[in-house]
Amino acid sequence: MTIDVKDKKVLVRVDFNVPLNDDLQITDDTRIKRALPTINKLLADGGAVILMSHLGRPQKKLNEDGSINVKKFTLRNIAPHLSTLLNRPVQFTDDCIGSDAEAKSAALQAGEVLLLENTRFHAGESKGDRALAEGLSKLADVYVNDAFGTAHRAHASTAVVADFFSAEQKSFGLLMESEIENADKVLKTPQRPLVAITGGAKVSDKLLLLERLIDFADTVIIGGGMAYTFFKAQGGEIGNSICEDDKLDLALDLMKQAKEKNTKLLLPTDNIAADAFSPDANTQEVDSMSIPAGWEGLDIGPKSIEAFSAAVAEAKTIIWNGPMGVFEFDKFAVGTNAIANAVAAATKNGAFSLIGGGDSVAAIKKNGLDSEVSFVSTGGGAMLEYLEGKELPGIKAIRS
Image 1: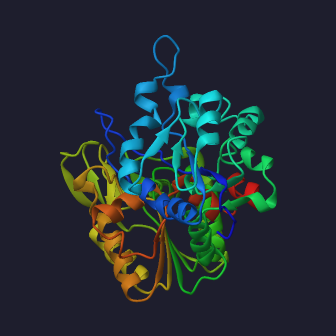
Image 2: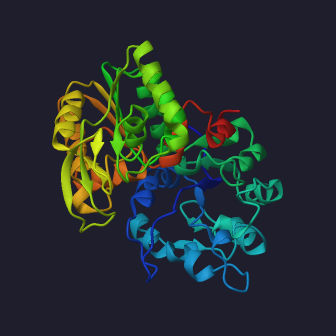
């Protein structure tokens, strides 16, 4: 981030879409903390910082009268904690554009911080509305995008606003630079062997990623709910396990692709089956191809944990996106937790590890291992699309 900001007003797109409890208190401030290096550098370099972000989906959760639920989705709830983290006052506007935002932006001095109201209070935000983007651009001299978590959205504040700044007036923030650099380390210059771990419920959600990984990884591990589609495709009995019946041929095709490209595809050989989708369900260890009627697989079994961990231990580069089981239930988080520890151990032995995706990140954090892996991405969907090889609108807007 080499852009000159001295005595300039800097409009920064951050990702402050943090979880709040019923009392509207922040329960996880990771995304805010990851934005601090960029904010502090811009302030240290003599800039006045104007922050914009979305919070939740206010347009999809309107009040009964059709109005915006300001109390629940206002970024005013974020301002006090941000002020504490920055150790300086944070001013706030009642809208992200308009007279109040313009007046407070104009009066802002070097070293001061202004937080704009939720950009998604405007329906035009998610539609990439140019008038909204232009209104935002009028607030500052320079635009910095540091919100990797929303880089896959062509929204007014993430991509379109960049059109109103010249190449010399726009830049990535430090977090965005770090996200791109670490993803490129995996995609463009990986040390081998490269082991990719994928999980989650549906093959359809990860189709492009699986095809891409099969193309360049040495080993692809498939866990989570999507594995049962592969078992059934091969003629296995999967009981009540989750399955995409319309993707059986696709699963077989992915296995064929892996064989043709000499990519090792590892599926669970055993699973923990439950008699109900419940944290208190009765369980039994079963062969992956022989899950009893009335039972459903909710986690990988001990043999699979051992095999997957062994593959991870040999890796020099690791990508992990998606849990191995129903991670929200402790009884079925054993496989995911084991993989988290295996990735951390491999990292300690010199492997480069990239963690992307909500549940993978949650597993790393839950096990206290976030400082034991190489890089934890702040963008689940954005990282997924970047790994798939897509050009993200928020990145393209800065580079173009």
